[in-house]
Amino acid sequence: MASYNYYTSSNAAVLWLLILCIFGSCSAGNFFKDFDITWGDGRAKILDNGTLLTLSLDKASGSGIQSKNEYLFGKIDMQLKLVPGNSAGTVTTYYLSSQGPTHDEIDFEFLGNLSGEPYIVHTNVYTQGKGDREQQFYLWFDPTADFHTYSIIWNPQTIIFYVDGTPIRVFDNLESRGIPFPKNQPMRVYSSLWNADDWTTRGGLIKTDWSRAPFTASIRNFKANACVWKSGKSYCKKSSTKPWSSQELDSESQERLKWVQKNYMVYNYCADTKRFPQGLPQECTFNTTSIN
Image 1: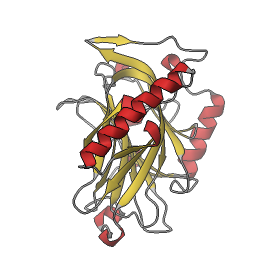
Image 2: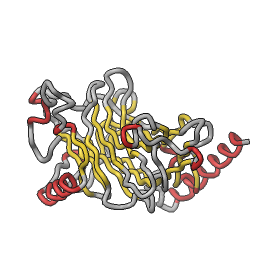
Image 3: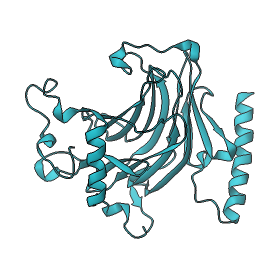
């Protein structure tokens, strides 16, 4: 019955999408068109004619999606409303990743917490299979009360993480200094909700309260102003003024970045000398527009 409902709603959504396109209103992302539900056995649901997607987690399983397209550089936007209340032990993710042991990856992960305690936004960058570049932040708003926009700019010069248009992290291309940068592997967009109470909340001390399940996160307004990878080639639409393909932080954005990092950063791998007793990662010694 669940399978029948899914495909019936899918067909209706495709018809509705065609109607919208006829009247020139199909620029926004549609989850039926843009994503596949990859796991969760019905716990991920596409609703409202493809404009809303919910991810659910219970004790048996979480759920996840992946984009139909692969991308090589672009600006990716996603609006999320996170699990409300006591979300301790849960992780909601939104990230780009390629495949294989030497994969590249650009991560947003939202670490749940006890009621009244702030979410932690966990960011990471993998290059050629190596991560360990975590930076974590509190948010300056309640991410469970409404939708907020989380964006990734990825171009040959830099990676920038944004929250509602405010930059929170920059990872620059420092290949000239011998530091790998993600630039050759196309990546899909992923999102998931899963249990990670062995490490998520206070290092795993606080466990998931399954009496509050199912836990639900909501996603809408996916936008990919990006180069699509098909048959070994990258296809890019013409960008408007100030395109993402060469975007870097201007002076105003650099000040906003400093404000976030001064007031809301709670962990920075580049300051963790106990974790790296033999010396901090090489990129930490280069200070460009921010701490990488």
